[in-house]
Image (cartoon, rainbow, N blue to C red; front, side):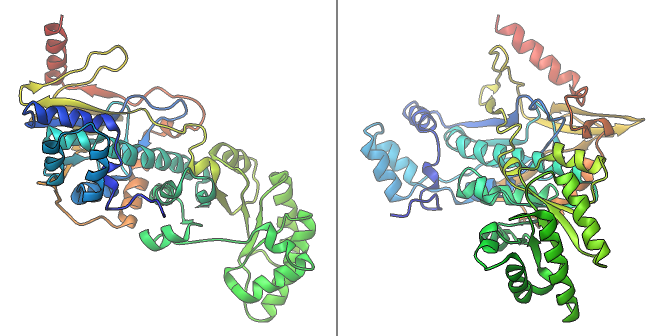
Length: 449
C-alpha cells in the first residue's frame, strides 16, 4: 500500500478533537456562522518580520474538501461518532468565506493572516490543515527572505529536499523559498508542479565513480555543456579547481563555456579565494563559484562581508527546516459567532475579538500597522486583508509565482531598514489597535470579571 495524503483522504488530515467538537456541535444543533482568525502569537527570537505563504494550497484544500466513503468508514470504526453525524459529514463541503493577507506580503505578531467565516462545524474542521499549511510555508518563506537579504545581489538555490521533514514539506519548502527569493530549486517535482526553475550540479559519488576526477569532469561537461557546474571538493579543492580549469579550456575549444564550480566543504573563505585565483589565471573569469555545505544567512553574510568572491549559494538543511526557528506559534481562535465578538483571556494567550482588518501606514518617516474592526473607515492606510473566497469558491484565479515573488521583493524593500538586521531582535515594528477595537477589548475584559 502506498500511503500518501491525497484529495481522497485529506479531510482526515485533522486533529481528532476537531471532529469530536464538530460532533458535539452537531448533537447540540450548533452550526451558526462563526469567525476564526489564524495568526502568529510571537515572532521567533531571530525574526523581525514574517512573509505570508501557503494561501493557494489552503484555498485548494477548502474548495475540494469532502469526506469520501472510505474516510467515513474509518471514522465509523472508531466508535466515537453517530451514524447521523457521519451522514452529515458525508454531505459536508466548505461553504464559507475567507479573507487573507496576500502571499508574499510581510506581517507581524498577532496580526490575522487569514480570517475564516463559515458555519462553525466547517470552520472548526479545517483548523488543523490551515495551521499546518500556512504556518509551515510562512516559516520557510520567512527564512528564505532572510537568506535573500544576506545574499544581496547574489543568487541562492533551494537544496533542502533531502533534509526536509517529509515529501510534502519538500514541495512546499521549494515553493515558499522561491516566493521569498530563491532563484531555483533542486527539487524536480516542485519544478514541474509550480514552474520553478530547477538547478543542480553533481554529487561526490559521481566523481568517485570514475577512474579520476578529471575524467568525471570531462564526461559531465560533454553531457551538459554550458549548464555544467563541477563539484571540486571530493579530494583536494585546489587540485579540483585546476582540473576544472583544464576541462573548461577543453570545452572552450569546442565552443562552449562551463558555467562554474561548486565547493561544499572546508574553509570556504580561503578556498574560494584560491579557486578564484586559479580560474582567473586560466582566463576563466566568467566561471562562477557556488558555495554550499550547511550554509545559512549568518554564514553567507560573514563570507560576503569578508569579501569572499562567491557568486551563488546552495542552501539546504537550514532553509527547508528553518534551522534557527523551526516552528511558528500559530493560533486559530474564535473571534465572533452568532452572539457577537468572542474573546479568550488566558494568560499569555489572550485574543483580540471581532472581525478585523489590518491597515499599513507609511508616512512622515513612520511606518506602522493598525488593526481595526472590519467596518471601520480608516483613511490613508493600505488594507492588507483581501477577500479571496466566497461561498466556498475562490474569487480569483491563482496568482502566478512570479507575481508573488515580486510582491515579496517589494514588501521587504519597503520595510524599515533596521528590520532587515539578521542579528538579534530590533525594536518591534509597531502594531496598534484602533480606538474602537481597543475599546471592545477593554469592555470584554471588564465584563468577564
